[in-house]
Image (cartoon, rainbow, N blue to C red; front, side, top):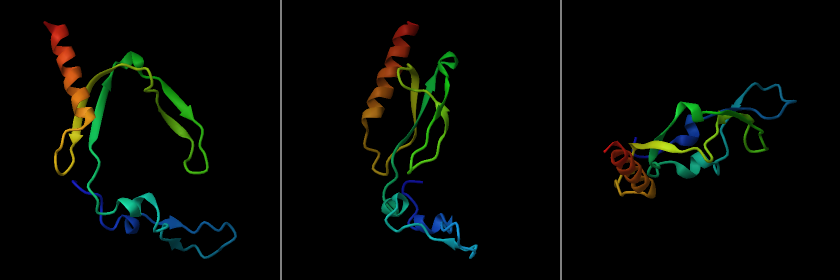
Amino acid sequence: MPTYRSNAVAARITACDDPGCECHQWTMPDPESAEAQRAGKPADPWYSALIDASDYEIIHFDGDPSSPSGYGVRLREVPILRLRKVRGTPDNEPTVLDMVAAALDLHRLADGL
């Protein structure tokens, strides 16, 4: 998908946030939300990163008022073996990550010689 949904706000509805309310209604998110501001704009490029299995470390991160707590994979100070573009931008202009991916590929090829 080269752009974000033009009706992104309508794509996500949330439960009424008043704990004392018994309306059981669903409300639309704030029109100033991140989804609303990205609606219809070009999508960001998306990359996948390959790291060595021995470098995977599951970590827990505490939530804050804007995001819940959860689990993820530690990526800081972990060597990336390969970087692959999954989706580019609509204009397909190269990004800094494209140059990093090319450098990683060149390094991998040079090590194999």
